[in-house]
Length: 275
Image 1 (cartoon, rainbow, N blue to C red):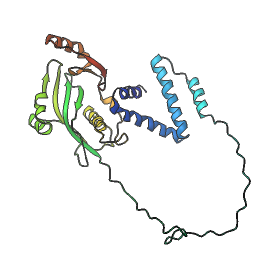
Image 2 (cartoon, rainbow, N blue to C red):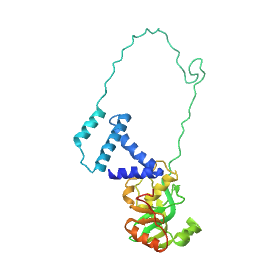
Image 3 (tube, rainbow, N blue to C red):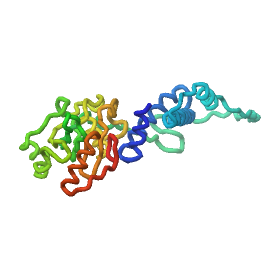
């Protein structure tokens, strides 16, 4: 449940994540609608979100009886109005002309025929080269993919580090200047190539998770066009600063390093995504 509200909070800060939050809400509503109806299902989702949010914010206990009463009020059938049965009208005993496949209805011309339209198959994979920021303990703080692509034959899923020459070919001349150890932040920036063999499979690691988020940001996939199962569990909490992503435990150390160089470190947020 806490991950759900982390998603909502992140979506408020980053508009690109709002389709993901909407997808989650729509999925829960769809499950409930099988037992009720779409309107009642949306009301149930709103009630459950509100009750759980109060429990998390107030650090209180879940009141099962209260939840049962409120759910009962939503699910209770409302009053039904009786409808008068109108007096049946006598119908003249006339035979109506029937249409034929060739001529259609009399006086209306031949029937309009529609051809069946098919849509192109959905692209199932993705690939991209980018720059990853790695903390001293090996934690992936973020991965930036400037030009993600969809492809039908991406190859085996996973992430590999690129050599400087391969990074130059994939990312351009600016990548060479960005690579290497950043002693001020205590991180290393490396070039990577990440492959998603199937968007229907759940993310494998942090690089995979960031690539899926970039696909959403670049509007290459729709909210329901890929699996995001377990995505938040793969991402670390990061201090997003004016100097770039920093490990949360290293913020004060980095602040001291920055001041020694006459720089000011500003922390904009501590979250799984930059604000």
